[in-house]
Picture 1 (cartoon, rainbow, N blue to C red):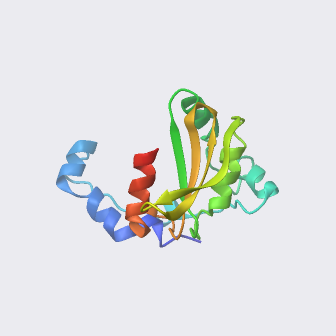
Picture 2: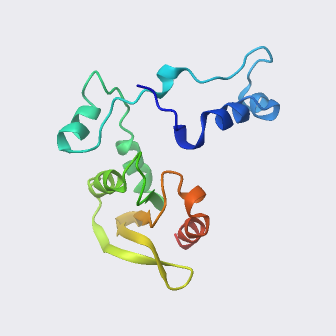
Length: 159
């Protein structure tokens, strides 16, 4: 089963990827056209429970790469922010919270609210050693800057 919601729209992405300036930057030939293949968007993975998370990296039905070791290596050297909208129906913040809390970094500041617009709760955040931070943005879906642009900007600026 394919996904038709691909993070903001298939048509918009296709227009962007076929823009002459973008095509030149990618070194695409003039005769080719970038387009989605339905099989590119098939998602057979699940993050609902521990068994599903384990199977994501070991099963034949869910063949995805595990980027967590690379993220851990980079995050041990430079500050790193991972954020999720708390009403994201595509990648729930609980899945992001789970993998960020299982990287092995020591927690230095427990789950706490962060402020948006001076006094409103913009979401919640947990800070780990090395400046590795997980945050949620209240009321935001999968495309956080699209749903909560000011809160997203405040979060990134305060990071």
